Amino acid sequence: MTVDGISDTGTTQDRGTLRTEKTNLYYGTFQALKDITLEIPPRAVTAIIGPSGCGKSSFLRLFNRMNDLITGARVEGVVEIDGLSICGPEIDVVELRKKVGMVFQRPNPFPMSVFENVVFGPRRHGRFSRAELDDIAERSLRQAALWDEVKDKLGQSAFALSGGQQQRLCIARVLAVGPEIILMDEPCSALDPMATLKIEDLMRSLAKDYTIVIVTHNMQQAARVSDITAFLMMEADRSGILVEHGVTSQIFTNPEDKRTEDYITGRFG
Image (cartoon, rainbow, N blue to C red; front, side, top):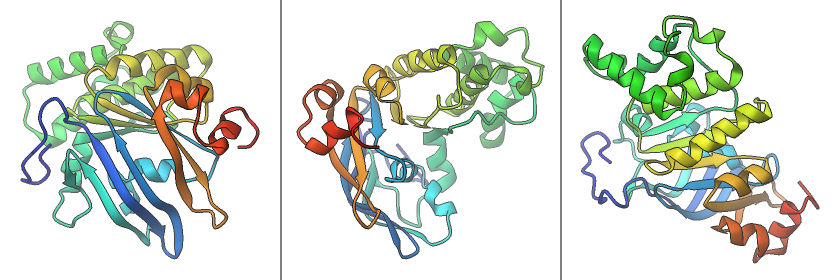
């Protein structure tokens, strides 16, 4: 990845690797995350699980620097993408967020047409002909498994779509700017079961080409869609810590830490 002129040292094979090492996040005097060391592999789905308030979303936002928008937030330790630190003042945050897209808990389409939603990013970041924008829109909507449902509705308001369609439209909007990494913060929590399954199928499909990191409270969802699972929980001072991480099948069937087992089996959380 190149961010504001910094060369990409990663190979095509490892591009999209995320890493934190002894990472601490503070909101003013409150420590939200404590000594988080985790490597997230490329082209896989990594699920971040844990009880409410343990810092899952804060951890996710480390990688596109969305925490910067919170007054008093500061990060200590290592946060890297493809071996490059993304915490320094020299980093072009706009460029970073093109490479690290984010899908939020509730669908947030813009108050414009389906087509204009998808091409909003490309229009802002480059000069494209109408034919090029048409190609970007179709490609992105196909990747988001939405093209067949909206190809005759491109000029209609995005708000006319169902909730599940709106969420896939938001994913298409992220894909349109050419990211390497897609962060998803509980993307199915506001959706019905059928729409949820479509998003889960889409995550599995996208993981062939993108690094996907999802925060979820749904243990069944984490078990279904993820390759890797990381479990966070709160210490007594309410700071979030990483208890353990590993291959999802191992985390869910034979966790190393009793706290992980207790959470997954519903004893707390």
